[in-house]
Amino acid sequence: MNKSAASTLKDYQNFLKNYPVDYFTSDLVSIINPPEEKPLPEIRKLWEDFLPTRKKDQTLNFYIHVPFCEKRCDYCCCHSKALEKTDNIEAYVKNLVEYFRYFKEVFKGTSFTNLYIGGGTPSVLSEAQFDYLLKNLFADFSFDSDGEKTCEIHPSSADLAKLAVLRKYGFNRVSFGVQSLDPAVLRKNNRGYQTLEKVRSAIRNAQGLGFSKVNADLILGLYGDSQATFAQSFSKLMEIGPYSIFIYPLKIVPTYIKKDSYRGNFERHYKSTVNFFKKLQRLAEKEGYGAPYDPDVFLPMNDASAWAFEKIGEEPGLKKSYRAKDYRKILGVFGAGRFSMSTIPSKISYQMMAPIDRKPTEYSCSARTYSPQMEMAERVISSLCYNHYVDCLRFEKDFQEDFFKVFYNALENLKALEAVEVKDDRVYLLTRNPRKKAAYMMFFCDPDENVLRRIEERRNLASDEEWGKERGIGWLRRPRPDKRDLKKQSALKSELDKLCGSFEGKTAIIDGKVTNVGKRSFRILSKEGKNFEFLLTPQTAIAEMFFDDKGESYEKSATLKEIRKGDPVSVTAALGDKPQALVIRKITVVNWIDGKER
Image (cartoon, rainbow, N blue to C red; front, side):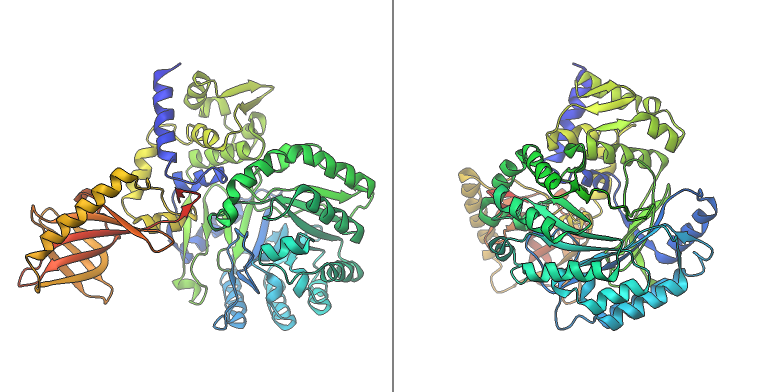
């Protein structure tokens, strides 16, 4: 085996131990190409530059996000929150309209391929709010007549009046998030208010209003569900008769894994789904529904993909369908609303993370700029996440580049590791293990073998909290203390107590965030907004304090190099003309899952 390839692989594997990528392999893109703040006026200019160069057949979709739900389901991995009394949906809708108007002139003369309203739960909007939003949307933007116009709807809030407003503005598809029809499963997942009658009524109302496509979603792998109960939900839904039923895999989120050690249960459940698919296929055929030909392609656990069962012989008449991402082609997406994602092909992808309660000219988004190499790497990762291979001919058509030349070094390393196979103009990844896949994919993101250095440079600019939050991938893992560590922790506490003891009556504890770390001094901005500078001496003790999700804490020794700008800290200091830092504690919050830290 190539020693260089083996050494690099080991570096990648060690690095990935810090990240929960085992169910979200595509998170690699966010880790390797980190987002940065970019002002909305600058993004507006990028759209202005892109649109004249857009090919006539290039898909350009419009997405609107409504980040509110009546209640938040335990399993949900979407960007949403349960409604509170302080949430003003009316103001949110008006801010969306102001955002539309900011881009109105940019897209003048442009027709969007498809439209999708998602969430959250868009049906928390009232009939009047839907009407106001859509009236302004269609006044400012144009859409292809043969494309989908879709809205996600919760069956419990899908009253006839709201559905009628959608039809009034030309919506031809509605998607109901059913997830399960088993009352016990719904209760265990904080969704017990949904009933079979509400689902039946919502679907029948949509059919009666003339939607071309009426879809219902189910989730495979919910806590408390089994293959038998899931098959019953599937059969009941087919009896009601929507045009299509999409079955999504459960996307694990850290809070959900805590339920009854559910991670192990889910893994066992998921491994049997290929055989289970055959049973679902037989059930579907009896009820006149067609099934996807290859379940393994349509059901990875890291993207919004699903098994799609559609009624045989019913042609809805729509030539185009909505996608936010597609491993087969380059899409453009214009998003609006908090947490919405947008993509300007070959230029940038960005997300509206902040509330949209400010003027568009003052707004900034979390954006990842594409280099040509990074865009190609992201395509490779998406392809390998979906179906474990890269279509090299398709790659060459989209990028006008030879895949084998662009990724020559990566392929040579992966061949040496016996990790890939080239067959019929396709490059196959030979493992389905998510952690191995993630490590192998990093070779495609590292043509110059400097990806870990780039990540570390970006990492040094942010605290652990900021680093995790901006990626949505949770906290960095750290080893949980064993008995030896706990003994050291006790000794450390005694040393710290002794150090502070001689200054009794002259000390203060200052909590804040690091603004600067020097060789002889240390600065923080306190929670009260005051700036403090503390002198550092050879006796200054530095400790890292961990708080877990149960409120328990422990400490370990640390060095000054482990304190970075932006880190939350607590400084025990001796007061005087020149305050002296006695103990600096870096505060780190962690979440424990099945004995592992996330």
